[in-house]
Amino acid sequence: MLAYIFRRLISLSLSLLVASALIFLVVEVAPGDPASFMLGLNAQPDTIAAVRAELGLDVPRLQRYFQWVSGMLIGDFGTSYTYRTEVSQMIADRLWISLPLAIYALLLSTLLAFPAGVLAAARRGRKADLSVMTATQLGIAIPNFWFAMLLVLLFAIKLRYFPAGGFAGWEDPLMGLRSLTLPAIALALPQAAILTRVLRSSLIETLGSDFIRTARAKGLTRTQVLWRHGLRNALIPVLTIIGLQFSFLLAGAIIIEQVFFLPGLGRLIFQAITQRDLIVVESVVMLLVFAVILVNFLTDLAYALVDPRLRQRA
Image 1: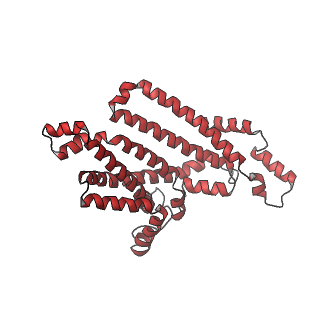
Image 2: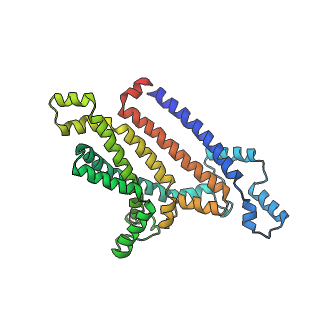
Image 3: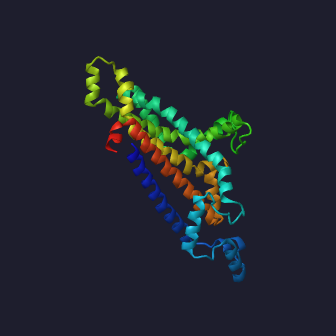
């Protein structure tokens, strides 16, 4: 098991190194100069040069890359060009919105998908299965921002159960959760549809295996076989999807945050791109890449816990 974890940690470190180089390269070669953007079209060349020196943009790119990476290793993400504020503080302020939103949406999608997937697999070919598959097809086909607008129209404008946008803060946790409920539902519904279909397919394949037939021959009922043997052995592809979904929900909620005016990481990236605040873009994207890689690492560990064969190979 320790060898298995060690190999995954090496893979994680190499992935982060490659990702940091690619992120820095892509952002740096993008058109547009931050100093020129800040000063406007009529800025004089000497003024632009002075601002570039103040921002540290006159340093060679390779040196700036190593300064950026070494700073991140000690928690220093640099200073925002636009707001002249520590990027780490800007990320921390917004992470307390994006992270709970991603966890909330993942919990909702999992709570919806597991009973629906198990029901569809247990009732394969029947009306319940057809109903679940039709609902999941709609969930996959309809964009989450369209779900978001429908939720706002129904639950915020008509029924007035939830706010239409903004974030109330965590001074009152219930009000904070209330602010995140509609965005979390809008994010969770398409993800629940995907997870339901994966769980159904994995369970159907598992229930057709030889060891399932052996268990039935020993006298176990269909329900006992489903919950004791089928579900656990069908979890590996499901864990993969859950890990990918959390990464997507954390990094890919830009549109939903715009719809609900949530000051999260997605909105921070959008604003930084429009303002050519390169250090913010690089740092936030790198943080999200780290989250994706870390979740994949934890998913690999979950594989080893669910499937002992992986530990034996290690």
